[in-house]
Amino acid sequence: MALGRLCALYGVLAVLVPLIVADTPANCTYADMLGTWMFSMSQGGNDRTLDCTDPGPVTNNITVQFSHFSTATLMSSKGYTYDVNGYWTLIYNQGFEFRVLNRKFFAFFKWKGEGENATSMCNEIMPGWSHDVLGRDWACFQGMRIKPQQKPQQHPPAVSRSEAKERRLHQNFKTNLDFIEQINSAQSSWQAGVYPEYEKFTRNDLIRRAGGRKSRLPHRPRPAPVSEETRLAAAQLPESFDWRKVMGLNFVSPIRDQGQCGSCYAFASMGMLEARLRVLTNNTQQFVLSPQEIVSCGKYSQGCEGGFPYLIAGKYAEDFGVVLEECYPYEGKDSSCKDTSRCGRGYATNYRYVGGFYGGCNEELMQLELVKNGPMAVAFEVYSDFMHYKGGVYEHTGLSDPFNPFEITNHAVLLVGYGRDPETGAKFWTVKNSWGEKWGEEGFFRIRRGTDECAIESIAVAADPIPLMS
Ligand SMILES: *[C@@H]1O[C@H](CO)[C@@H](O)[C@H](O)[C@H]1NC(C)=O
Ligand SMILES: *[C@@H]1O[C@H](CO)[C@@H](O)[C@H](O)[C@H]1NC(C)=O
Ligand SMILES: *[C@@H]1O[C@H](CO)[C@@H](O)[C@H](O)[C@H]1NC(C)=O
Ligand SMILES: *[C@@H]1O[C@H](CO)[C@@H](O)[C@H](O)[C@H]1NC(C)=O
Image (cartoon, rainbow, N blue to C red; front, side, top):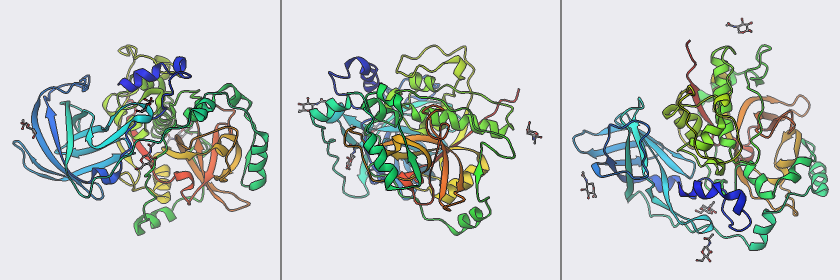
């Protein structure tokens, strides 16, 4: 992908070329998806090594209608009947996946231009990948919306930043003690402190560590209403729960450090698969999986520029599998994909947004998923005050640091538990970060639960790893 290659030069050219740290520049919405699309399929019968950058001649067109909440209906297709039982979900603001006739289809939305000047074309897609639900018979496809459900939306290009701000973002972070003091006197739920190591990073590096510029989702969904059934089930759950101490056993793999690469999504994804393998095998399969293989080889993400757990812990782990850390050690930077044929691969299946589709999530469903199946990938909005978190139950103070410009990001992490503060009664989530063991509460943090604090209850992702039998 052109963007990925350009970004590999980021370190060298950072000062000269103000590249945007982001996922893909696509910025599309749920409403953009609704309506009727036509997809043009290319030759099938391929395996997963298929390269869809050049999809080849069209062999078949299909017409699919996407409607609320996640229903995909196959309207017509050469030689097929209809399928009214299809499913679709938006994938953040980046793309979508749908399933009809027991085939899965995934594509990113189309965009034009680079960096600040990129515009999304939300009624078209980049060439996508399709295969049957068993992962066979791969084909490429292209597509466009032929009939919107409502008037098409305008997608203005992102507003450019001033050169002055751009320059400041490329300078090293400087600790601002006044800001830390302000945070600590504004509230008593959590404590802020100094991280001397931040001064080794540029402000941009820190933003990238927290998910990357432009990773914030403008149209993120709100938590879904809680059904009566869910409420009753959740009422049966323990008052507090923590996968680090379930009957004295720890099912959470060790804390890691992503460095300055925007690979949080790969760490959250591998962390989920690692923990769930431990849960499924009563700690007999304690693997550490490779985020670098995702960064360097992943077709469904953008290396150090970002990506999303739904596509990694889920779709990539199902379609391509993941490898062990020892077979593909972490480098913390974009690099070309090495031969992995000597590495064994492990797989996951049944990936899903908690609640069934993008926008179906809420606190109770997350608790139920957590206790039943294990830790899960979540994302939340990082503000500059969070960077100074040392301990306690985080909630955003509304304060920002005037001396260190920051952009609100969307950061992927791993949910491992929940509880209630014995003194204040405040409900919290316990979350594993990927900023090293010295950060926060030994690499973890707690954040307010039940109020969608920083959007943490809106987009949880789960997947089920497949343990080895031998
Ligand atoms: C698919 O649709 C396109 C655009 O309408 C048309 O040009 C093409 O002939 C169709 N191909 C097949 C194989 O139906
Ligand atoms: C964006 O477009 C403007 C005006 O066309 C141009 O001056 C600027 O260099 C472009 N920026 C990038 C990052 O390509
Ligand atoms: C995405 O589009 C919305 C308007 O539709 C805009 O408010 C937002 O700033 C855009 N985000 C990015 C990252 O370009
Ligand atoms: C799980 O592992 C623990 C610790 O090794 C052991 O005490 C326990 O009996 C195991 N549980 C099962 C169901 O095998």
